[in-house]
Length: 122
Length: 256
Image 1 (spheres, rainbow over the protein chains, first blue to last red):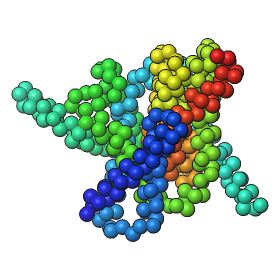
Image 2 (image 1 turned 45 degrees about the vertical axis):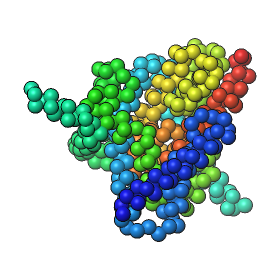
Image 3 (image 1 turned 90 degrees about the vertical axis):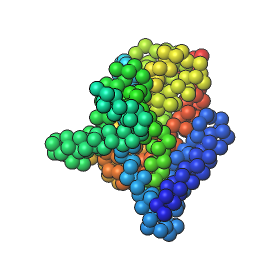
Image 4 (image 1 turned 120 degrees about the horizontal axis):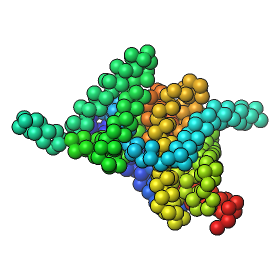
């Protein structure tokens, strides 16, 4: 029965990515826009509103546990050579964008809280 | 000698299984090194850095673009670490995410997407300008590369940028995703990256799927779904905004 869990993830993925592809086509860009995001939203809905058999849950949990090994494998197939070869422009453009975006995280979070509180207060 | 040849042919024929074995060793070594450094929680971050290091080494030796997947015995890494299984696993992490948590950051999460794309774009374009690039097409393409390494080439080819500039934009995006994986676990305590809401904002601001996924996995795997749910919209939205609105802004400033 565990495999049913894998089947549920697969179903979410195909529905989500298809929706993302249709959305991309509609706005005229290639690939898909937010396909995995839609699939995740489906998975969230299933988690929160559908009662699943424990064995089915174990199947989903199994893939979820493989997530970090998959990310480690993903890191090992990056084109790190070209990242280093790009020279100053690539390194500075990518590097400053990363560092500055990281620094922006607490600011946006704070703005969000402020906006929410304001909304509730008003 | 014959035995070694036989063993390597067995491995080549079963390279996906080999990739499971090698990743297992990488994670064990990562955890062990993290333990030695006194930060057991950073085990996956260390394993990711080991992966990047191996990718650099393999890339130098093979001259290929797919890291250790270009080594014949390790070609299974291309499947295990490829987009298909990555997306499959990311979706599975949404299992257990709470609707209420997603709702709490809903609007800020969406706002962070637009802010993140525009911000990275203008930082990238400013750096390109400072280093001597002047045409609107070049500046837009490099700026788009600072968004993600997919948005860069998509934008560059839409605008007819030279292949050298497109290559630069890919490199800028790869630097971003690599740095994001490495820096995120280190800076997480200082930027309040410890709850679903900040993870969603983080995903929207940084946006590079692999960088966000790798970075959050190293901080706290429970946060992955929240960051990933916004990050997956980033590249698509970037590919939409960069060659259109953002390019028009650049052309207004720098002329055609």
